[in-house]
Image 1: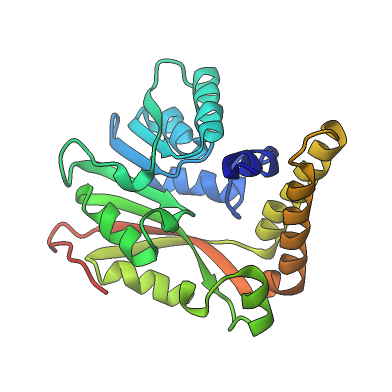
Image 2: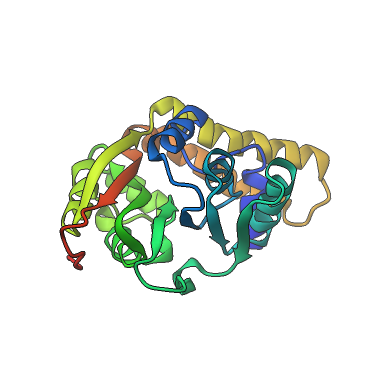
Length: 257
């Protein structure tokens, strides 16, 4: 089954394709207080909700990057419905290939929930830090272990123990790169339940409406497997947070291991 078709179907009920809430995203946008026409990039932008809200609130100039053609199409439709004439462009490409017109020129660079694009949390911070101007914002969303994962969970999910760190480790990784942590938005179990549950619901609705889709058996098998992993282990083991960093103008950003 095509990867992006799978995620399009399972995330059709989502406004934000991450385990966070509408309220937390609203608070994040309010917190930033960006100047008019601030230059922004959102890597792995999903349906473009964060960037569109920034355009609505501040009139930013933005680029949304995502590898999924379904997400880009959704983002473009939402942009036209909500902020016609906005200086925002959505582009289908691998986020790791994006380069701003000039290094260290952006007001804000974000990658919320897709650090795999750059090869992990640390590499994501390095990449985004190289895009922002002094005083600019780096915003990332990243999982972390709430407790040590069981061997059964790791085996079932295919995750590795060192694939994620701790909440404090995620925060400290930014500090090591000359970034000041100014806020976190930590996901609750309710946020996780909504994120996971909407996938189950979307898959069930799709199956009801498209019983002859040849991809349906694989879709339902994958969703059932993810549901079992979440209910048995993931809900109590895996956390997630949005980390809001700001570059300290007096310090030069450096790469750290």
